[in-house]
Length: 369
Ligand SMILES: Cc1ncc(C[n+]2csc(CCOP(=O)(O)OP(=O)(O)O)c2C)c(N)n1
Image 1 (cartoon, rainbow, N blue to C red):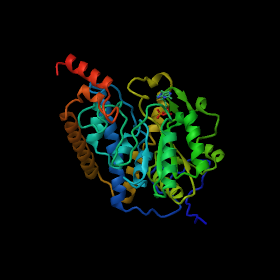
Image 2: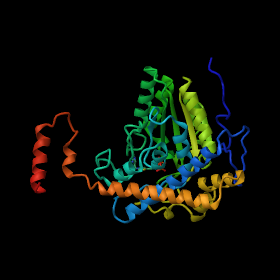
Image 3: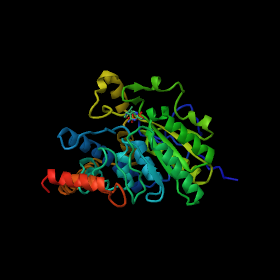
Image 4: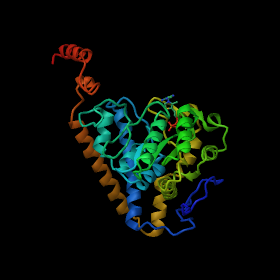
């Protein structure tokens, strides 16, 4: 018999929230995070936001080809990172999750190097920008085809179950991903197999220009869990403390052997879908402004202020130290220099076959190497 330690009701009518707009605690239990932990959450939110801004600047200054903005998503992303066991559990993130990667502990230099395709990139320059991953931290490298990472995430969770490792998998994705066949196949199979996995929808209400009404006939995303036979939590993804506690509960459920969970986190992306999109064509400015007033950083800041653990000097100190850290990481990533073209012929097969060897030779001749 599995002990029921739930704090939250699955399938709630409204998103679960623990901090109201005034920064007041509304939870029905006492917060068990001390001031240092709360400040750490706040710093992670700031770091995620600044990283996002940096990546956009890199694209705007022509140093990278592409950027996917994540401002507005930080609440749920930081919550996921703080709720898992880093380096033990597995993460299957998507392209907007660089804030999650950073909060988990993926070094900023790795993230910048991946975006810039420099020699410091653990992926050796073979990924698109905004596709982080980490071998030491069990972060599956981001897959560009929407929802393509869901079946492998389920596979990893089934493997953890079969081998009885105690690991949990967390797979995150956007609302658009829930319309994909891969998503259904992965979620369905996870439930049928009782796999220890938490599926997290970062529901920002748009899949590029397709809005939620045109995405699904469902009342919300969390309710889809009912048909798959798993709990579905509906949480305010811009409330980092609510997101964190819901993630803790979902992960505990999965780790206890009770099977998968679906979490829908309501968020909003403040910017366009990507650096190749103009969002003013499909959504009103007022809508963007209204969501910005629910900003996860602002919400936690008000909460910290109410608890007396925030002041302007500390804010400035945190922002400056994050800025310095990111600047140093970016400088190190750039200093590594660009990935040599011939690296593309490596790692194709265990031992290089003659076609690759020949092509590499031609390229080297062409480049005068
Ligand atoms: C299988 C597939 N179809 C289409 C695309 C093009 N595409 C890239 S991002 C995207 C929108 C996905 O939206 P959503 O899952 O809601 O995530 P969001 O970008 O809103 O965070 C689309 C359609 C793709 N990458 N893969």
